[in-house]
Image (tube, rainbow, N blue to C red; front, top):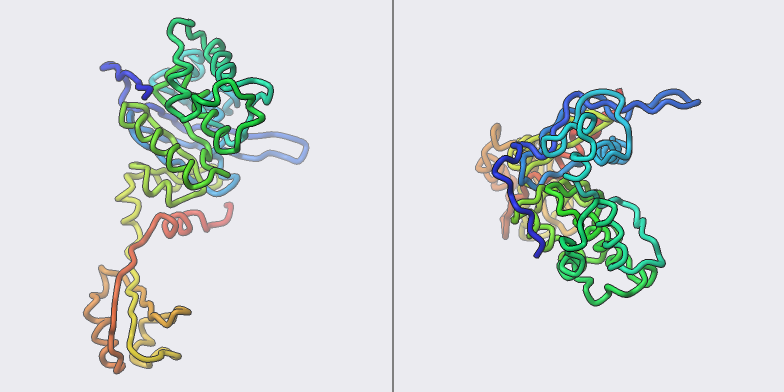
Amino acid sequence: MVQTPIDPNSPDNAIETRDLRKVYRGRRGTKVALDGVSLAVPRGSFFGLLGPNGAGKSTFINILAGLVIKSGGQACVWGRDIDRAPREAKAAIGVVPQELNLDPFFTPRELLEVQAGMYGVPKAERRTMEILEAVGLADKAEAYARTLSGGMRRRLLVAKAMVHNPPVLVLDEPTAGVDIELRQSLWAYVKQLNAAGTTIVLTTHYLEEAEELCDRIAIINHGRVVACEDKRTLLGRLDSKALVLAVTGPLETVPEALVPFAPEIRPDGRLVVRYKPSEMPVAAILDAVAAAGLRVADLSTEETDLEDIFLQLTSSRMP
């Protein structure tokens, strides 16, 4: 496995931005892509950057990577200001883009060698085959990129981003179009990188992935940060649970005693009652169920998940 040595003098935050702004100006007017984004990504964290399409995630990443010029604010990567020390900042970050932008007539080995050369990695220090082995592409080292499957190309992009051994790795929708088996192997490798000290920043539309992998999550909407918290704190924002009841006998309508709880009947006949634990104990619901003359065969609770939080925070329209 490719490991990132941890410098004892490393900054506390792998990425830090203050009031970061980006405004695109054109014939059709102006578009504010980032509107005062202030974020801190702790060193060694697995950080999720989430938001709907057009929220500003890719713009944020491209500014850090030196591909887009910011309109205002400050941004640092691994303690290096992207304006004052652009070369050092770029050397500290590896970006896996959404697009499969690979030269079809190059082999994986050639692509990694070229990428290493662009970052000034001496030939004696290059780890081309080690990286290809880590992403499961050693046996495809001499195959043309155009012959690789979509999942293999995606892993090759990860390999390209790691040739200069950056302490920060940004994954922009890395599992889009990747089948489940390859997705699992990709995450296994990324988890190893994170365990070895690499800071991971992930953008994804698969919210279940972010919930499983990330320890801290930021949500951007309309170019603004609407949440940036520890995952557990974020998931605790909604004081809401669902009590799912399987009752004996058919249930076609909601009993009158349960109407105040606004329950719903699922297609499988289960009764779902949503409640706020801070305001209503489960016992009160079960008492109402008993008063309705229903016999419970089975019951379970469903916790709030990241999708619920995401929808609540991003449902507002553009101001």
